[in-house]
Image 1 (cartoon, rainbow, N blue to C red):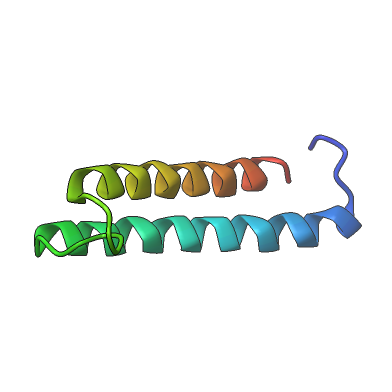
Image 2: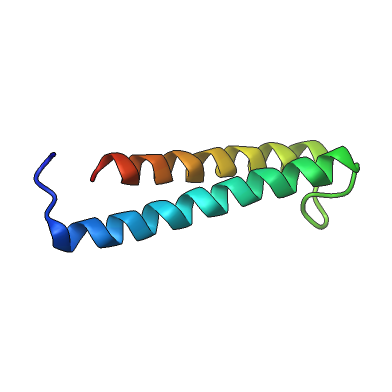
Length: 71
C-alpha cells in the first residue's frame, strides 16, 4: 500500500474504471470500423484516423491501469 487512504481510493477506482471502459470501447469501435472499411473519423483518412484512435485507446487503457495500481 502506498499510503492512499479510503478517501482517495474511491475516486481512483472511479477514474480507473472510466478510463478502462472508454479505452476498451474506443479500441473495439475502431476495430469494427476498420474491419468494415468504414471511416473511423469523418473527413479523415482511414489509416491516419485508425492509427490515432488506436493510440488514444491504448493511452486510455494504460491510464486506467495506472489508476488501479495507485490503490
